[in-house]
Length: 122
Image 1: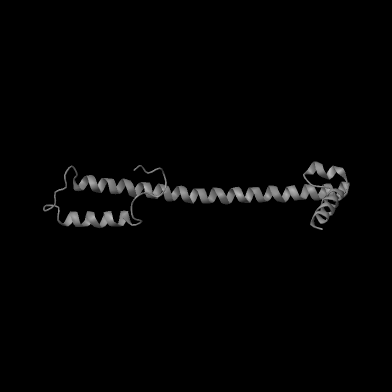
Image 2: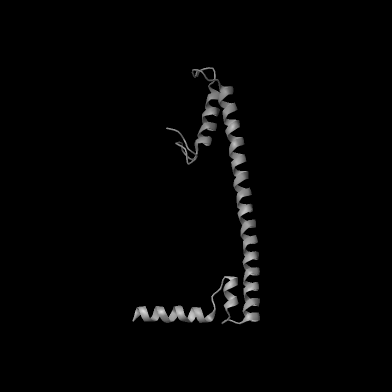
């Protein structure tokens, strides 16, 4: 079965277990033979894995910082958007059709919607 990027088919502490096995193999290296693999091959693979884990953790931290930066930027744009809409309301009035050009609804349209909704509920 192929791992497609989700959680793999291994325990959460797989690396810890591998390090324990490597330590045991180092202590008994003369007594243990593993076909088609040497202790140095195993150690090399563990080091590669540790490096990949560190890279993934760094990318996770970078992603978190990028999301935080994105959210801060969106929040600033949203504050400016509200500021422009408020200026438009102050300039043109709540009941003016110009308010619609700023993504809002004039007070007349809001009142008409509420009246329709009340009539539907009765």
